[in-house]
Amino acid sequence: MKITFSNPAAVKTGVVVVGVNEGRKLSDSAAALDKESGGILSRAIKASTFKGKTGQSLTVMAPGGTRLDQVFLVGLGVAKELTAKEALKAGGKTYAALATAGASAITVCMDTQEGSALSAADAAAEFAFGALLRSYRFDKYRTQEKAEDKPTLKAIKIQCPGSAKAKTAFAAKDQVAAGVFLTRDLVSEPPNILYPESLARRTKELVKLGIKVEVLTEPQMKKLGMGALLGVGQGSIRESRMVVMQWNGAPKGKGGKTDAPIAFVGKGVTFDTGGISLKPAAGMEDMKWDMGGSAVVIGLMKALAGRKAKTNVVGVVGLVENMPGGNAQRPSDIVTAMDGQTIEVLNTDAEGRLVLADALHYTNKRFKPKFMVNLATLTGAIIVALGDEHAGLFSNDDQLSERLTAAGISVGEKVWRLPLNEAYNELLKSDAADMKNIGGRGAGSITAAQFLQRFVGKTPWAHLDIAGVTWSAKDAPTVPKGGTAFGVRLLNQLVADNYEK
Ligand code: BES
Ligand code: MN
Ligand code: ZN
Image 1 (cartoon, rainbow, N blue to C red):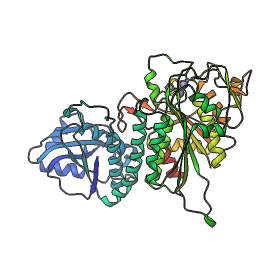
Image 2: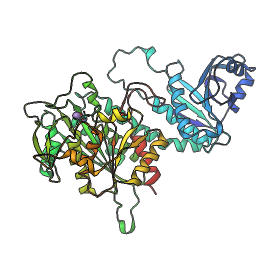
Image 3: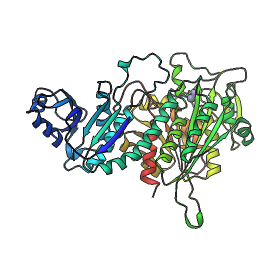
Image 4: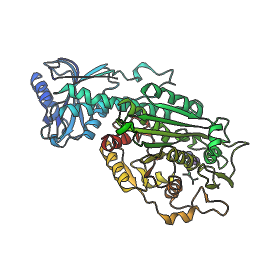
């Protein structure tokens, strides 16, 4: 998608998008076109149920008196209440409505929203970002798609007062979109193509952005004592990997001292069959996106480096394939994690926590980060609890929780905090080892989080259980169905709001 910004000028031809506020209030651009067409736009509005509410739109084809092919009226709600989130959604919905309509380019007129804290330039940048996010497609394996089923829309020209400001604001968002698209690409890839080694290889594309990328192989992980992670991968013919990515964007402190980094850790199970505790066949294909946490960390690193975030960040992903096989781990195996704790593996399908145990400890020990946030498609139970509206949030730190919650609300990737409590530890007691890898029937997401907490020491930490939000069966305004990349924009916002000062 080619997105450009310019200052307001009369639009005479093609497809034009103009805003209408709630109560059928025409924006200046809409009013000008209405006048030119001899009142056709207001007549069309009057004849419809279009009120100018957010989420509404109305198409007027070839209005008489003009040479325009189409005027697309987009509802922007009450002008003074227009937020970044609403402008973003309007952009996404506009893209979806016009993507396959025939035009290869459209012009969008974004006028000043009277009384809104959002300038026209910022609204324009958000609108463009929303359209871009919605334009994502994973079509590399479609060889027979008909031309009429493919999007025709290739270019969006946005006019707004202060267009230079809009262009600058959009440039950073464009980098975030690149991170989101990388995450969606990785999550969408089938597991015969994307497995630990190939996923690790894909992270090398980040090197050209200035990110340092290290890949740990099985012998290296063995030497480090990562028995929990390696146990999960041992049933697969694909070797396990761990990838460590570093972005050092913080200005050097006094005496060239480097600031402690913030750390993001991802579960990267490139396919989760359940292992010997095999999953049922129905729906098992979903387990191709069990590497969603790692994909978010990788996409986030790309976004942060792409926009040159002024902070030091490490991203660590544990990559394994969970397969049954002659060498697979068995229920009742006891493994020793890198930090020395022993784990009785009573269900080989509770593998994510085993991968994260070593990834979290390694990250904490090596980098002594300011905080760690891990992301994982960890439990089916979080889907029962929260569905696909919120990711589950677990944390040992109130400030970090509050910051994550606020960032989530502002970008529309919402998280909901659930409890951690010493009392749940009872459920993880093993007769044979320091702990077992499953709790009981109840509180499945909490016992999983409680398990992870044992590997983070005293470091401020948050765990996002993204099992319910990583993949979507239906289109949303800025997220086409499929991989959502939930977490990339959330954590980018967390960093931008709190850790770049
Ligand atoms: N990857 C799954 C969790 C999952 C389920 C993610 C559905 C997305 C959609 C995880 O590894 C798993 O299998 N968890 C088990 C844990 C149980 C064995 C304690 C689960 O949730 O059933
Ligand atoms: Mn599993
Ligand atoms: Zn899993």
